Length: 413
Image (cartoon, rainbow, N blue to C red):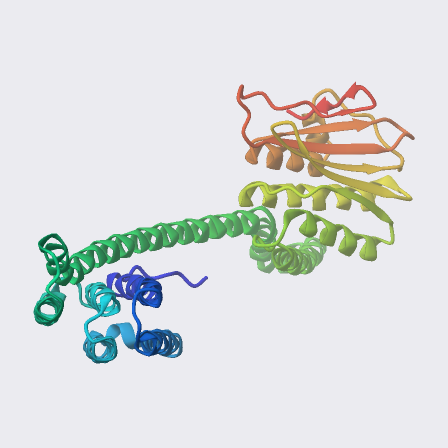
């Protein structure tokens, strides 16, 4: 599993790339709106149209360059220098109109995004240029004092926009770093859970079989001379155990391939049923409702499903199996019903374990590990139903009781 790296510099670059695009779009929108309003106020509209065209093409070019080369945000000097040239171009075309001041303010914000507080010299340069332009505009037009005071405030807009951009970039970068750290922690936890799950499965199947093979193999050399018949029996045991271990490992690998956590759970249940039906020759009818249990709960449910189907193939003599999956009240319910021979369900399932019937006992243990309970409904000649209910968020801590035909299932301990 590839894990994300918590890299502050990469978080800063991602935040800068996102906010650079936002700053370019916002600046273009403000400048174009201001320039378009000038169409209603000036007689020489050709200059306004030229500003509109210049700003639109310049913004499209900058956005295209960032799309093709996202690493440009890592070269702030190039970005700021190119943007400064565009500011001079807008100034030359607009001759100090409102479009220039909007574009220059956006340039200060862009510098704040890519440079942070290091953009202070850039803000000073933009402010000095804007003050010079403001002085020329006031000299040419001689507006009233209140309007003149308003115009004089324009040059400071770039610095204010830059400071806001610095704060926004820093906040977004920290948010990304925190999100990345949480993702890394979740991936590590998932990897640890997966290793623990695999270790448990190996311990419960292959490891136990190999332990028996090892004990038989250790006793084999001494038995060859003293008890040839016992040695022959031990050799048979070793061969059978090795075959069983290989089969268990193969089955475990097959189950792990079918276990895809990112896949919809109902789809996984459908595939398990299809594979089992093809191997056993017993038709399976599914009634599956989409649900999304936690990964570990889903894993235990699929293992219970496989064991229930294996029991049907070994013991039931069934002609058809019905598998139902549905969100139950405050949880999820999985049922496997067959029309086979059935059996008498004992009041205490430990009797099944003493009779070497470990499948149902194992399913009950897995149901408890998932936080739920296993229920049985069967009678000789009447088929069987194995159901497991896992409460996902029960408010009172009591699981729902699955029912079939009004009869309460016999609960596994």
